[in-house]
Image (cartoon, rainbow, N blue to C red; front, side, top):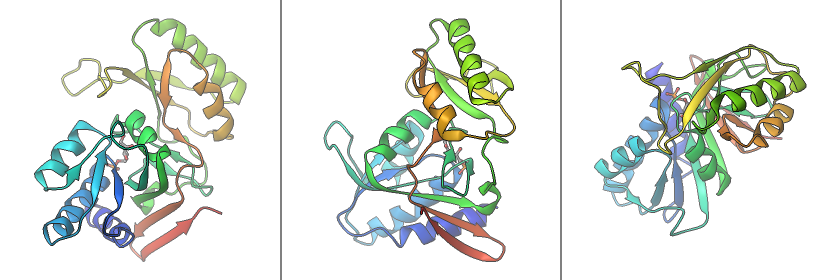
Length: 230
Ligand code: 5RP
């Protein structure tokens, strides 16, 4: 699986041009991309990156990649990131690594988003992977109730689990928020659910990435498949 992730990352690297401003994703697949980009930079390529997490920032710095922020610049040419699930409309579930908020801000500020993944992430319908929903700790019970109402309106249901870290304590995102993982099974209308979740005050962001990915690079046993959004 790791070899496939690296192959997808290497294919996406072919889209990177000298001088580009890049969004750098988070997760094990994006880690390969940052690693390979670092090799290019060390052999002379000039790019500047905006990392989507503190983990990616640390890795990119160690690789010698020049970094900036979306305070200093307001738009990016290209973001390359992984995903937990990709459907045939190139809608995504992201946030398995907990970086969904920065990932979405960075993707939305980019002219183009390329998703890199092994082909196990390609699904007919989103939802088997638990949907991460980043919430403000204040008023958690009220926010959970509002989320449950949104689920009912969107025709989905499932358990909501507050994410914990390996040490058993509640998982805290880079932004200081918590994550609820919603086990929905199958999301029939992801754009509708995304809209309903987005207007809940205690929800900071959710892991449904609708209409953001333009290209998906899928690596599988049969080779690389590049899918463009229609
Ligand atoms: C992090 C993410 C990741 O892109 C997603 O979890 C995929 O990770 P991996 O490449 O390790 O499978 O959304 O918030």
